[in-house]
Amino acid sequence: MCLEREKTKNAGTGEKKSETRRATSEDIFSFAIRRGFFWPSYEIYGGLSGFYDLGPNGARLRDNILSVWKRIYAVEEGMLEISGPAIGPGDVYRASGHLSEFTDYITSCEKCGEVYRADHILEGVVENPSSLGKKELWDALQKNGVVCEKCGGNLTEPEPFNLMFKTYVGPGKGREAYLRPETAQAMFVAFNHLSQQARRRLPFGVIQIGRGYRNEISPRQGLLRLREFHMAEAEVFFHPDKKVWESDREEELFNQTAVFVPQTGGEKTTTFKNALETGMIRCQAVAYFMALTHRFLVEIGVDPQRLRFRQHLQKEMAHYARDCWDAEVLLSYGWVEIVGIADRGDYDLSGHIRESGEDLGVFVNYPEPKRVCVKRIVPDLKKLGPVYRNRAKKIAAALEKIGAEEIDRWMAEKHMRGDGEGGGRGISVVVDGEEIMVGEEFFSVEEKEVTVAGEKIVPHVVEPSYGIDRIMYAVLEHNLEIEKKDEEEYRVLHIPPHIAPITTGVFPLVARDGLDTIARKIDTALRKHGIKTYYDESGSIGRRYARMDEIGTPWCVTVDYETPETGDVTVRERDTRQQTRVKIGDLVDFFREKTGL
Image 1 (cartoon, rainbow, N blue to C red):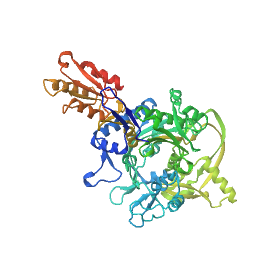
Image 2 (image 1 turned 120 degrees about the vertical axis):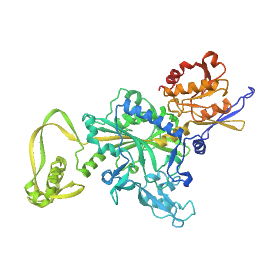
Image 3 (image 1 turned 180 degrees about the vertical axis):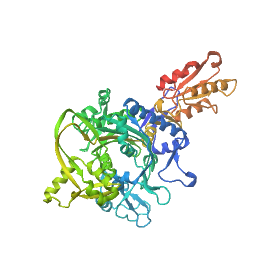
Image 4 (image 1 turned 45 degrees about the vertical axis):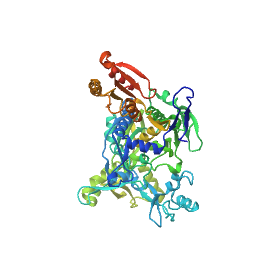
């Protein structure tokens, strides 16, 4: 599949016969290490599974990809940007559900102790193993006779394993904290600040770029499954009844054609517009960010013929998701998720409201004021004070924040129990992280008709979440082409010019006769104008071109013996290998026009 070959026959032309093939994962790893894109971390100490360094070319490629992403989300879509800490207190991740739900199933060999992620060892044995629960995984392991890959020993019954990295903040035991498994929570806990910046108007979006941390059971496949990784996420806040992201380019984006794999199964090739209109995609906002994702991925070099969107099955949905589609790419390893677009509903904000006691809602005006019956809890401080002392005011404030929906639910439960006045049953509030049951003798429920201009709602969230390391890898594998001529392999990385680590190589034809002096001056001048260059005078000009082609450099400038007389240089283009004469004074404009930078 990844070794499709194209043969060029040049019989009778005197040219060498060539054979071109796509790169495999083995090609990518050897190329990446040799050419400074990435390599395993801590190699001199034996390495540490799940951690990789980005080399000079890899770091530049990542930054260029992120520049495109930020241009789309922060500039074109007008979203706010924040940068939150990578460590958060345990309360945050209790509220988000990560401490209870963020688990994979682990199994180990009874004989040698080798540890496996249960669904990984079942890949290729059963369909969609990642969607299986504990019992289903155990049944599949036993039914299919799956044993330890290392020694053939029997495997243990799968057990849940939480993927969070735990630590403590402060001296001694300190305060329980965790490395973030996603950047999202910083945008939820800061919602009041962010909604103020957005002038309390919905919808609005917030982005964050940073690192995430997951204590993966069995990291593998290089950049595809890491314990520390780069993420770019957007949290887009909507009114629950109107999940619509308005944009002047909606029509352009929705008319793109893509491959979809819905929950019902089978691949369907259609436009995003049709997928939304037929109900395959459930809401406009999810469809919009799927279409925006498609545009972004194709722009940075992902092959659209090896790109699809797959909807999560209900039983594989994340704990926070109402609906989720993955952008998947076809690699040497098969189909791999690189972006997730999830409808998170009000899961996160509601969780943080319950855990913190803070109001994270937004007041939304009605078109016309309404007369409504409202209920509110009125605390009795004279009774609260003697019992709860210094916490009485906080408990009273928490009671006052309880909304009509919760009051109605409490009153309905009370009616079902048949409690009379002073029945002793109370209502629960959270104060200083502690849940307190406040008896109904400490408060009353007031009900009256009032005119209201609007209502407080908890926004819903649609989240596009991008795994930048996986995207980088996909760009490399989709664009590295290997051409074989007479037993010699020639590699060209056909990435788009605007994400290339280096824009142009600068070479003197030979390092003498003043050609090197002119070349160095050109190199310096281009870099002063923000154009990334690489000066090289070592080896033959052909070898220098080959080195630049392999790392994706789209152009090379060569100073030759005509340059001192004409002021021209040769600009050689990577993909076509065509050469053009360009005036030295026009080079900056030439590269800016070509790259759009």
